Length: 470
Image 1 (cartoon, rainbow, N blue to C red):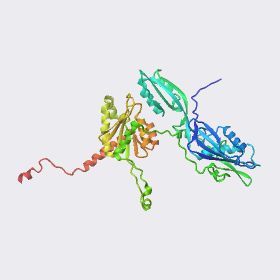
Image 2 (cartoon, rainbow, N blue to C red; image 1 turned 60 degrees about the vertical axis):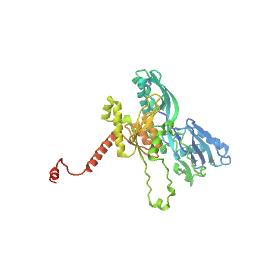
Image 3 (cartoon, helix red, strand yellow; image 1 turned 45 degrees about the vertical axis):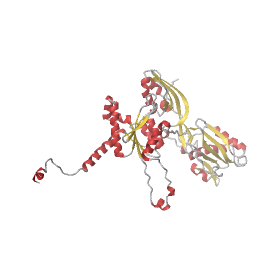
Image 4 (tube, rainbow, N blue to C red; image 1 turned 120 degrees about the horizontal axis):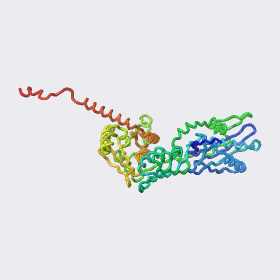
């Protein structure tokens, strides 16, 4: 046998974020069945659960058991990539049969189509498998390991360092960590060790890219149709999923599909150590008040546009900027403190131009027992992160919490960090673009200063004769 090995493919799964009622109808000539299913998001890792909330006088118990059998007999596919669905509760809430025309297989078709129609009618999310890992390596490779984990969009906990070996515990997507064991062996020269175990499914980090790559079209999947079949004038005809509600024979059981809490959305909150950032904004601009525009007079609402000023906040990744600017990079080779002080002075001038809140963030995650610090320097704020917290993590957290209240711009050349903050609603600017903007503002303000100077010249002793005669 000729045997070959490869790295395999990632098995993705799909689930939903909102509850929805799915409708399936199957009525070609001399066949009839209609099924209404309630699809609800389940807890992460719960798999698929099934239930019945339908009275026997609406649909007989034998047909109810038949629908549950059809739900369990097949691996139902999602509509994003054609992957199997999971973490969902499917409940039969209504159905209809015909005494004469309902035959074997009719409820199977109606049940399958109800699942697919419900998935098309709600918001789905792509899930990917994760690893729980333990990474053991010498202390001198700690910064490299942290950088790799963040690049893989993983999370980790920094334990206490004892001796010359450190152990990092965390999790990361399998798609990004598949071959990392080889890299660990290479850069640690065989001294590192990576232990992984599957940790279930979590939201896919590159959902749009994966969906585009798989290129699945749910509308053309003939084995898993999303529409239904109805009958008119003795002939069956297909109805698209978004038009089924106009043709169905049983009214919707849910008046309104209630929005379910997005259990998969990973949110973060400020802990007590980070409350000083909120205080910075409050001291500068005062408490943020949500103005009730409905209290305005109708004439003002109709005729006068209301513009709401949103204060600007710039978050600067200090060390990323230092290592991106050639002059500061050269200075940092000899004296990092001098480069940091030079950047702080430049940012003070820049804040004077922009008239915004400017927060300069420096990494201090390697300092043991460091609780972090924040203080005001002239007209800017300087933050040193706490132990096991990088500047990227601090900026991501701040952006997520305050993007709805402030117009936030993040300055960094880290492409991954730019992508994350962009998804949180913040604007982004690279370190190089920041340097060009500062140089432009310097030239513009200098030219403005020169324009304001009085014209002409005043030579020394030019009026001496005049005063001498007087």
